[in-house]
Length: 184
Ligand SMILES: [Ca+2]
Ligand SMILES: [Ca+2]
Picture 1 (cartoon, rainbow, N blue to C red):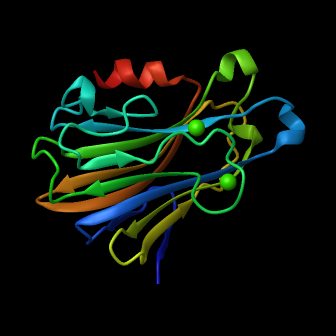
Picture 2 (cartoon, rainbow, N blue to C red; picture 1 turned 60 degrees about the vertical axis):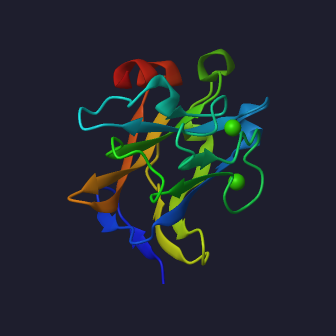
């Protein structure tokens, strides 16, 4: 049985190979045009900065240098139930310098398209065991983000050798560039 987390809650992951699944639906009637959400991961060291520029995983850089983190690629519509984008993580391969992984979802071209998370529904982040497909935890973002264009869904972090997940659910009126400069 998967554990359903509330905002701020933390839980052990207890699987060396796991997959992060992210899902969302877009209210197309209110937006008209194309609406593209993107999941990005920031692999951070003890200093809360990117271990290197190549440790920023997104649609144009789908794999970490150690191949421990692999992004499934860019989903352009969010159509359908289930995961819209997935990231596979293999802790047995991960660079020891990586202590935290921040999972951020942003709206592509939000400013030009005048879009925000108020037009997004059914957002969730879940973690399942890659080998067995067993769902370990899930966090449904039930908050109403009305003006935000970026949301940190969660973070995976190492404490004393143990990997945990925190349900963050923190929205910001920023684009992806702001996160990159913050973590560089
Ligand atoms: Ca996308
Ligand atoms: Ca969807």
